[in-house]
Length: 111
Length: 111
Image (tube, rainbow over all chains, first blue to last red):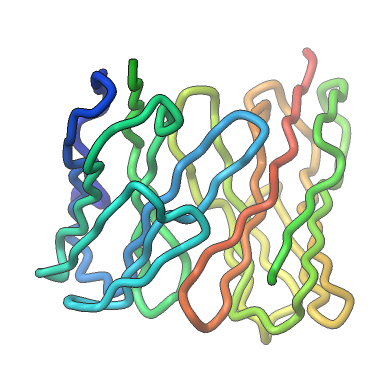
């Protein structure tokens, strides 16, 4: 099992560019989430999903879109990148809300 | 709104000492509580998961307890080692699948 795989590991964007952070899991987990981690702010929930076709907003959803067309994949889209979106992004998954497994993260810098 | 607090924010101890990390949460209606470890620049590694019906979980030198009625959890680390140096994060889950994190305790174990 690969677990939770995030790509890319590092990315530099210019302000206004768009991109998609990829997250895939091979554990048949229904629950998937995206978090951002910033110094002094801890880990904050961006969006989450409890199954294919079902998504909901977390604490800091503005500027991000998600979709869940398959159980395995939960991509996070930045529509128009802003410097405030410079952060480390983590994807996580869980089977039936029982304990979460995290990916290794994507370090994003917006200049 | 669920809020999770971890005290202390930082802790430095000599090798071999037993130590306790504290986590408190404001809403006792949790589904489970999870302790994670994060090394600098790395992702999150799950250490222990306690379901709401459980009082404690143990793994090696780690023991986590849960008192749901008072909104508290502790992580006990026995005979600390320099390799235990990391940030320890506490997170709670409600029945919605949202994982809410504390700010973490950064532990340094000195040889």
